[in-house]
Length: 298
Image 1 (tube, rainbow, N blue to C red):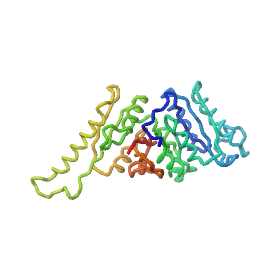
Image 2: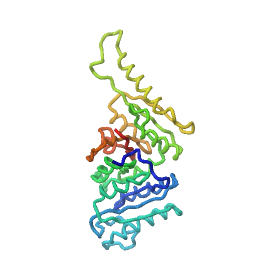
Image 3: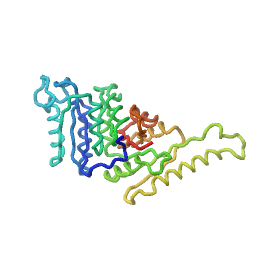
Image 4: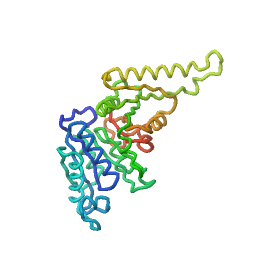
C-alpha cells in the first residue's frame, strides 16, 4: 500500500482540484501561491463524469457568459488564472472524466500536496464541507489542504496568519514537520498546541492533594511538546501552549485568527475506508481557517 512514508519526487507538483465554483477558485489561488512558495509546479485537475459544466462561476474568465461551457473551457480558464496570478509558474492542467474523489486520490499518490475547496454554493451552505473534500482528506497519501471560506472569503484574509499545529503523543509527528515548514516558508510564528485532560477517576477532593493529578497531566503535555519540537530550526518562532480540554475543541478554538491549522490523520495498512479521527474530523467541519490534514502511519 502506498502511504505517507513514500518519498516524493523533488519536483512533485502541488495538485488542486477545480470545478469552476467559487470555493474551487479560492483553492486554485491558494494552490498557486503554495506552489510558488515551494518552488514546485502546479497541476490543475478537473474531474467529472460530464462533458459540460453546470455552473456560471467561471463564465467571466471563459468569456462566454450565458453559455454552457465545455469541460476543457473550465480547466483552461483555471490554468490561465493561475498563470496570470503568478507569471512564470509552471502549470499543467488536465480534465478527467471520472468521479472527482477517485481522480484526486490517484493524483495524490505523486503529489507534494493536494488542495481542495468546500463544495457549498454561497451563504451558510458554503460553510459545509463537501463529500469529495472529506473523502480526499480522509484517504489521500499526501497532505491535503482544505479551504473552508465564508461569504467574506476568510481564507484569503487568514492566509497571512500564523500556523497552528496539534501535537499528540507522537514525538516524530509528520504533522509537526509539515507545520514547521509551512511556518518557515510563510515567515510566521508556529503555535504548537497540546491538549490534555485529567480523567475524572483521578481527581480528588482531599485538600492536600487537590490539583495534583491535573498538574501531572499538564507536565506530561509540556514534555510531549518539547519532545515534538526539539528539532525545530532556530529561525522558526514557536509558541508552545498546553490547554486543558478535548483536543478537537481546543484546536478549533485555536484556529480562529490563524492562517492554517495542521492536524494528523493515521493511515492504517489494509484499511480502505475513511481514516479520519475525531480531531481531524472536527477540524475539517468547524475550523475558522484552512486545514491541512497530514497522513501518518498508524
